Amino acid sequence: MTGYLTTHVLDTARGCPAQGMRIDLLRIDGDTRSLLRTVITNADGRTDAQILPADQFETGTYELVFHAGAYLDACGTPPEDPRFLDIIPIRFGMSHPTHYHVPLLLSPFGYATYRGS
Image 1: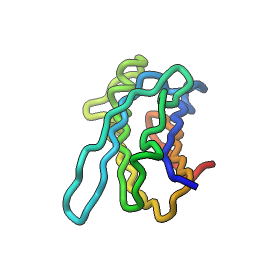
Image 2: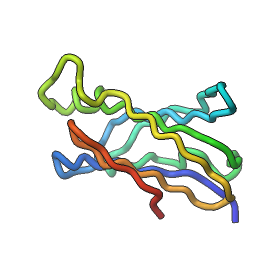
Image 3: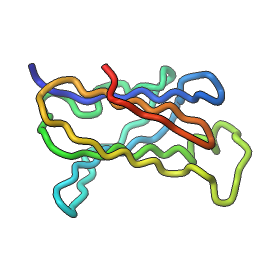
Image 4: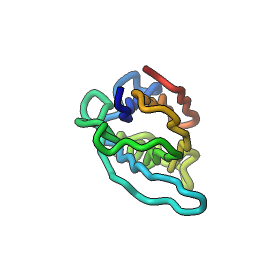
């Protein structure tokens, strides 16, 4: 089996998928962070393609950076200065060539993630 990476972002405060959220994927090698790609969530809160497709998959340490503050601003969530949640980095390891799914459940004052399927 070849590995790949996906995500799904749900806005739990509004009860809907988080459409239009920017997500950056970085590879972590020691102290070096390398941006691999930037994607935007679609109407279902997913990306149109795998964030890290099978032909580019490598085991290692990665980080998904969710731009939650800009998303909340665009949705009309009452602003704060500074916003409680702005940038949400989730660092994780991929140790086997399999499907990794890293979802984000988001509200203006909290978030949760897990290894999905």
